Picture 1 (tube, each protein chain N blue to C red):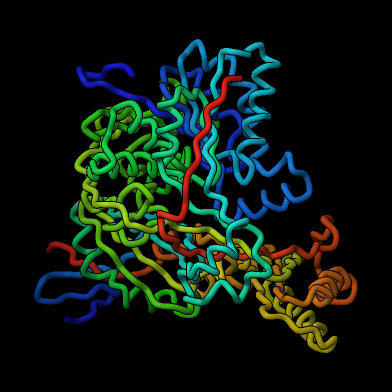
Picture 2 (tube, chains in turn green, cyan; picture 1 turned 180 degrees about the vertical axis):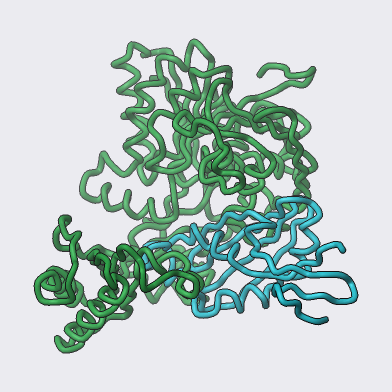
Amino acid sequence: MTSRRGQPTVRIAAGQGFWGDWLEAPYRQVTGGPIDYLMMDYLAEVTMSILQKQKSRDPTLGYATDFLPSMERILPVLGARRIKVTANAGGVNPRACAEAVAEAARRLGLAGKLRIGVVTGDDLLGRLDALLARGHALKNLDTGRSLHEVRDRVLSANAYLGAWPVAAALRQGADVVITGRVTDTGLTLAPLIHAFGWRPDAWDLLAAGTVAGHTIECGAQCSGGNCLVDWEKIPDLANVGYPIVEAHPDGTFEVAKHPGTGGRITVGGVTEQLVYEMGDPTQYITPDCIADFTTIRLEQAGQDRVRVSGVRGRPATDKLKVSIAYFYGYKAVGTLVYAWPDAYQKAQAADRVLRQRLADLGLRFEAILTEFVGADATHGPLARRSAPLDALPEVQLRVGVRSTDKPAVERFTREIAPLILNGPPSVTGFAGGRPKPEEIVAYWPALIDKQVVEPCVEVVDV
Amino acid sequence: MRRRKDGRTEGRKGRSRRVRLVELAHARSGDKGDTANVGLIALKPRYYPILVEQVTAARVARHFQGMITGTVERYELPNLLALNFLLHGALDGGGTMSLKTDAQGKVFSTALLRLEIDIEVPR
């Protein structure tokens, strides 16, 4: 903790916004200027099921493997700079992830110099039948259907834990906290709870820390990345600076980035991130509180610096969200590219030929979707109305099918290539070969009583 | 109100001009299951009341006709000069289920900015 303009300040830097984010970001965040915490978010809705599959094949896997090389690179820096890490990289196997990080630390000569905290208790897969038997229906939040319908196909089930177990690990001296399914926002709120001693019923403060977390949980998406307002004037995206929250005990905070980095932090860009993946803005529900996004005040506090204040919160609910993944079926997507003249019309004709052949083969699909990339794939009929459809230089025909019948999907993947020689002309772009059928793991959101989920915190010396 | 030769209209309150939302607002969109959300943000504070008045849930539902199967909900965030729209049934099942290029609703944002509205122009 340092002081900025007379106020105690904790700096939390975003290092990853999702599994697959920029590998350079964590290292740049810990070396580019002063920070107290590095927050790394790895888990999207379907990530847990992918990790569960990996774990079933190899019990030492099941975590975000990108985390390891990032940690190997920054571990030597963390101690000297007194930087702590919060990350939900543990996926469905936080202990194995922690062991791999500990091994890396020992290799780097850090034995006895690092404490790793592990947060578990989110994984409900092994308890699912007991929970159902005790009357926890885990009904689908969107459809209201009972989990019994898909119980035999469930691949993973994880409750979203909040900030408190992460804060507990920090209180027990952890330098690196590795978690399973902890909310994205909890990874930022936890260090603030720990550093400022915020109470469990300080709803406005917890909401402020939650808003801070939401602001930086998608990494550079609040510091110039994927930013529409004046996008062509955003400087040096090649060196984009990932965001840093500079937070104070009263719940106000500023969003900034390291000096000399690219990107841009403005009220407009931060606003875009605040409304990203937003539902009812008056109730942004987390395990820790309900934050009211209609109370947020933003002001430009200098170049690449936005001040956030005024956040109000309400008591947390007595439920936790549960993310369940289950096997659904198969899908495949095939593409071909048609060239001028009449590129769009040729692609349309090819689509008609393909669909007739699929029908003649008697193949049944739950869905067949055709898109013409270059004409309507992103904006549909809104784009077709104004696009020069007769003059497009090229169009990609993109056809996808979905079915529970695997042989039907497999046969579909063999019906794309023949069109090159036996369909409409001026076609190319099949270098990638036959498309592969892909398993569909579907998402089942549900709620569960908070009291039946018991977070577990362990802190071990390396 | 009468229509002039240049396509603009003239009424008691003054002239009006037809503009695309992209001239008045910016936006970002994302997904939650099969629902896409679009946050629409006024480029200037004086544009916000225009958005509130004209970009109604019903108007947005008409705009996306044929692209979404469910209803449209609208929430106001005057503190951020923003409106948040939930477009239900927008993503062909969403997530891993969807066959769409834009399975996560990332560019519904700019699709909304194609919407045309009439704004009053001072005389």
